[in-house]
Image 1 (tube, rainbow, N blue to C red):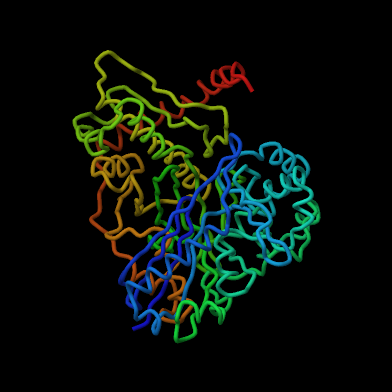
Image 2 (cartoon, rainbow, N blue to C red):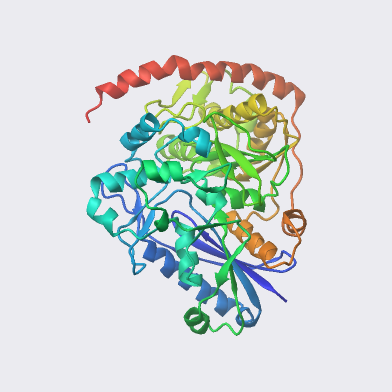
Length: 498
């Protein structure tokens, strides 16, 4: 039996998932690591903690599955996007990685767009705080002594690939999130790196996600006790791997993922020009793309609501009676802009609101309004895809927190006006990483065959015609809230101390 290992490098922990060649999950292991915030808005991690976590996970899996030492054939990765890792000539970490959720780079984003507005045409994305290039610019400006030491630049999962294989690599799905990739030519943009004084030699070699970058280095093969060659594959960005692991490999199938933030994602057979309204990235599926919009506070809005108004109450209890409330929450609207918003507004000053509060509203109304507001925000991204790419979604796969509540799944079906399904065993981006190892190893001829073996769906939730019509009316009102409240939020923000 051949086994595959997917390593999912997340923001708070690293998870390892072992699958056999038929797509069956055999076992998992995980290890946590800290996140530091030395100043408000800063978010950093020590890459050495990722390596230590990966070593811990691999040894734990070897203890659970001793036959891996003879039968593991491939390792691949999924990883948090955008986070900047800088190494010196000895491959020593120069400074803590600046993570995707670090927001210190607003001025650098403004500078990038002012000095090089054509970056949108080259990369298909605009400069936002999460992307890698603004972080590079920040280091150049604020830590020139560290920048002078840089000999290698990479993203988190590629740091693990270097450790395991000795190869400096990055796949196209992750490279697309750096703001350094010429998306059409699939190469590092000479124009961009020259403009921002980034030496070409510090950038890693580019690979397709399922492409082999090397084999496990001899010292680690001996340390882990592997008796055979283990191939290392490039892997992919977390959203790309999550999409592959959800079977998003054809047009007309979307994915909605509700974690702390929320994502609405669409497979793109051909690259679509959304003019910066959505993110457009290379897929983990070779030579394909995906587009996605982001709601900054999706599950975070629900957590905030629970912790503020129903502290200590379990989510299942909090949401137990939302089905008693009719669509539209009896005239109550919630906008989930509690930490600003990304799609479609890219506004750091907008804040959330409840609109229409009435004396008859009770907790169940507010609970339903929060779920509906999060879903309306994700529908904003769906609408851009439908209008720009003429996309019609025949099926949407719901993953994350939104897939765990039956009433919320029905709201998604009604608000998106599409059939909703879930995964019978949701394993997140790590399963997509293992699938890339399976494809790269030649166990499956292509992504479609691999999806057929690995991905299993639950029952389909169909939209209710009457609810769809009601939500269309409510959503039209929801769309009016942002332009009405944005000026007020800017005025309120101006009152706050620096």
